Length: 268
Length: 270
Image (cartoon, rainbow over all chains, first blue to last red; front, side):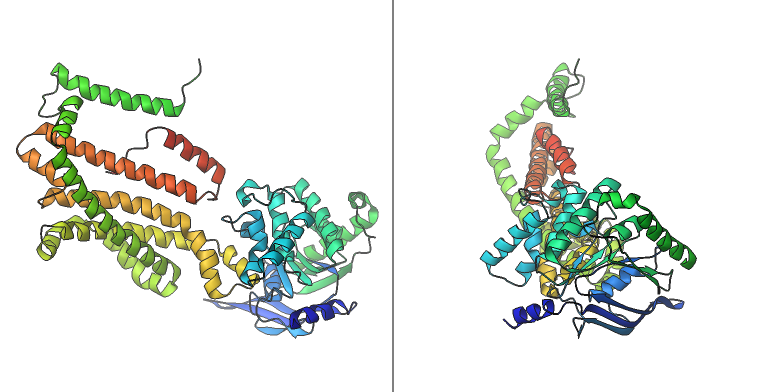
């Protein structure tokens, strides 16, 4: 029960940082010596914020996300999540959503969503109830018995999102979740994600290389440089919420998008 | 005019082959010594059914045990060699080059060690099929998407959970391919060794009747092996299809499998 008390405490202090990264650096060992990958990254993500990280290919944004998830260790620097360091994956604090390949093809949509709960041996009743609630949340009622290969790309990503949310972690990390989708599905899914986000009030860190997606989704966009990755700009997205498709045609949207593009071009 | 379904064509081809087998020897174009007619072959099978049935039991018994060795040891060894980098670097080159050795040259050694009875057949066929099963399992384990493991870790899976909940289910298709391949090769191994040195089994009947130029009895034995191999193949495919509904590109694959199951299967490896 200690865990429940802890989560309540997490949610009861808004305005505080969900994630604090300080002086994080990383390098990969190779035959020709160390290849620097990330260079002195510091960032703070406030509780309930939607932060998008953009940058040129190979800038280390996925590496950074994997470190935030505790899936990869950094050489230097600290990562705090709600004041406690992240060293190993901690699904109670951080949920991760990958590209579409990571759904287990031998499990149905429902069993995929239930997977994290079954790892912990949660009571069956509880598992069923929460899994069904997640399926409804992502708009897939009636598709629970389908296998991933029987679902469209967008539906698969809805299942991934449900799987990331089922343990109710306060933080959600998303690694280019819509990269494999076609343009139209991608727009719809972005819109859906915002709906789910406003219904669940998670803190989100979202990696993408689509500038439109970044501006459309974010409260705040962090721009990374080419390798070794540094954070070179932090752009507050002032567009009101809820965001609409019409906003994409506005001058403000275009200017924000342009500013990010200029930064990336300068940096790569 | 509509083109007939592939399944219909396959059944038609089989019927044509059987018909030719019956008619060609009857015309006398091919001497009976080379090709006895289908009806003669079947007549012999019925006449000597006790002999043939006893031989079939011996062969099946040897195949079953050899399959146990080849598939059991092959899958376990393949999983270890494919899954552990150290073992892979040490052993995979050795196993791969051993695979190129025609293991049948070792069969005389096996008869010296195990005698001319069933043991030498089981040992030979078991080892004959072991290498391909092991190598295909090792290759299959390595093709498991690393994203699956990463996702499981992010959800808090411990190492034992990663193995039982992700690696094992993800390996099921590979294991089935290994079983199908291993079974077919075991049948080959057993029959070949029976033909070389033995006193029982269907392979023995082939050799025995060939030396006394009794063609219908040779062909009766060949027919039995053919049926055995095809039956095994169809059974393995049916089980595989039921177990692995999810295999990537599942739908097309299942449709293709339905096609081939409906008609005559592709020529068996034997």
